[in-house]
Length: 234
Length: 108
Image 1 (tube, chains in turn cyan, yellow):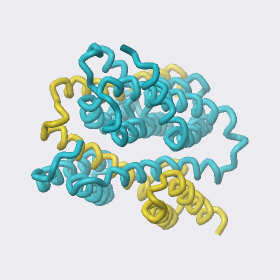
Image 2 (cartoon, chains in turn brown, yellow):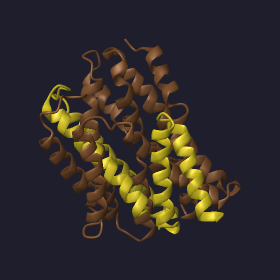
Image 3 (cartoon, rainbow over the protein chains, first blue to last red):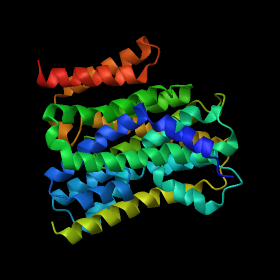
């Protein structure tokens, strides 16, 4: 029941602002890897097999700082742990009885913040049976774009000025911020967003490695329970 | 920093990342979009993403660390203002905010 139409619609969704938002950061990341002494295959492999930029960056930083393999593993696990609740949240939205379980484990690899936000923002307009293939197109295109941009950043970043590279790095958090604002629906989400940000910067001074996870967990949990009676909005 | 060490690091980083995703698939197998747990997880997800953004803007690593905090905060405010003033135009707000950020840091 693979829907080529849904798959292509997903690609078309990713083509444009989502791909630019992620691709520019991946380009800058490729440039960073080159300046840090990584080779081309290593740079390509990082985005191809990890595909979660903050964790990739932490991996590279830990290596450059002389960390051990255990340091790398734990640092990336902590940084990319956000993917766990995001995946738990996304799967019930796109699930359809037609697809066997193993396919979801394949799909898991392309779940990242950009694809997640964009899927959450459109899923109500899609038929349930189309969502899996739509997300495959959306996330798959972003994944491939990321690989191409990382390699491009590695190879041709010398053509780009330092100022432009810095601008590229700034695009991603701002794009995430705007996507977050587009989700400002309902008191419990607004509370989670505002308190999550405030707690994050407050806790960073005391527990920098754990600040993001604890801030999100506390803000989301408190927001959910305070506004539990609010009408559900999937 | 040997070649093999880097490849092993990439494998471990990929395994750690995939574990988070795969465990999420496993945990979601009986979860319904109508359940309160689903709503709770959504609040946590968006809370974490918001926390990540706040950390990157206020305490960045890498290239952004060499830019001023005030420029990042001002550009963030510009992004929010443009987004709401211009009918939630994502491209315009990201573009104007980024240009503002670059101009403040390198041309003023």
